[in-house]
Length: 135
Ligand code: FES
Image 1 (tube, rainbow, N blue to C red):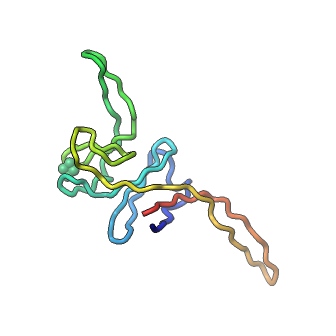
Image 2: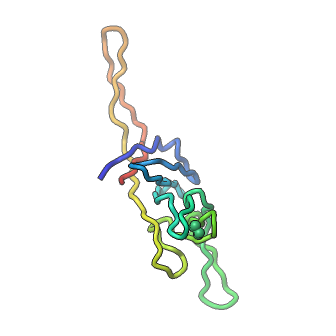
Image 3: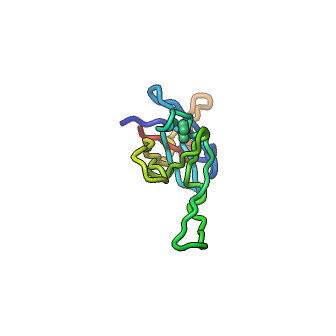
């Protein structure tokens, strides 16, 4: 399994996304309400760039006339024909075997760097949190 630094946490704020290329594959990394998700940027229907699609929610109903809007921002709609996918596990919202590959995303501390001034060196801790894609 490999790891790729997607960027600093500050560069991927809530409601943002970044598409990265790993081993010839595009993967979309999303920040949804502070939680990170990653999916392959390839719709299983007709190969659209899925991760360019709209993030939306899910309407559910337990009985006629009652509709509840849930999971805002957790459903990814394909930009070509509107198939919808659960961003957490890549499964379609409608009953289908079609699925998008998902990946783990972690947040890790950046490593320690050194600042050199003249002949003396000074340790500098870099405490930036990095968004790491595991592929
Ligand atoms: S290509 Fe995604 S729904 Fe058709």
